[in-house]
Length: 176
Image (cartoon, rainbow, N blue to C red):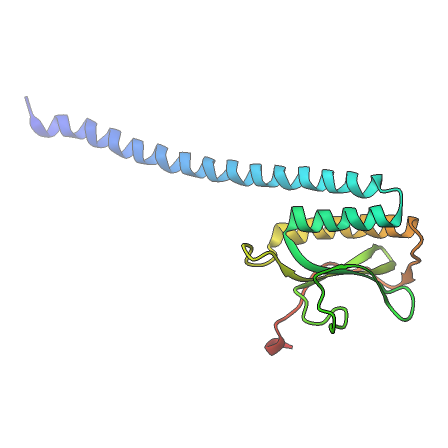
């Protein structure tokens, strides 16, 4: 029996096994991504249900706070009505007392749709175990912005004209 001829089939099997393992890792990564996206979709659905079920401004602001803390991991934020002068802070959590709304923030999310804007959601910090806001956080916030605006309008806030825009990250102080 030739020893080299018995090694060739084994080598072929080892190579095929390596290819299959690489494919398994690719499919596992895709599955993790789909599970993450599904989780975000479920979070968005729950968040929208909370916003739409609020019957009073206090319930609405409580629902917004719950969404930000539980689903996004926000530690400090302010919901600011910009449709009137002076601007009013409708709700906040952990906002520094001497802080002007919007300064030293991580992100500003417009609360509006189309050509009208009711205000902004200003995010100052996230919980310590979270490094910052990621792409999926901004996707969720961008989806919630118009819904929050409609709910706030229904609760009595009035819009101003101007484009609503999208969430934006604030550049660090050295980059401004």
